[in-house]
Image (tube, rainbow, N blue to C red; front, top):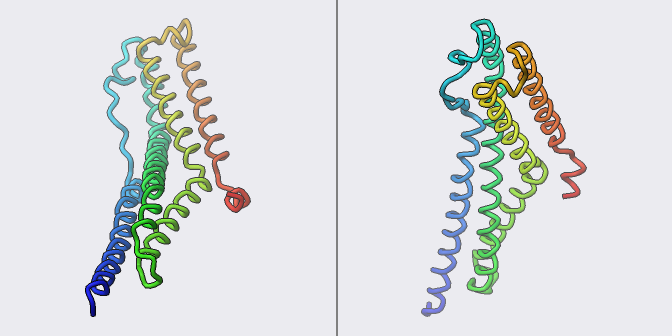
Length: 208
């Protein structure tokens, strides 16, 4: 066996190793997304809350605290879905960018033989990115990320506004609380509509 043949065998092994390394990295970097889907997301402590709000009476504080406690499940869901969509969005973006220069580079430096494992590396990279982007489009990841993140941000802006400047919601305590409840309900409806609008349709997935 001559030196050229030995070198070709070593290179083939390198490309096979590269295939395994790529597959390993693609799986490992996807694990945080699976973890986000499984674990329970805890809400971050927001500092002083309705229990200590000095602008309201004891009865009003109780109403506001009870209302917030009923929303914690919804807020946790919004935060969880925003995190999942964001993680998968950047997973797709990063791997798409890497593949856009890796595939032509591999094609240029790989040995042009049928026995070379480099073609399988190109197939693996292309298939992986195509699958990720198909899921990204089909599951409307960008739209979902924006909707849940926007809803979470809008709620906490409203929450802080009521704590700091309740007079913006009305002239008296009852009007302020009712106006706050109405604004929260609007946010919930907007997110609910955005969530249902982002449900994937089979026809749209096929066309993409």
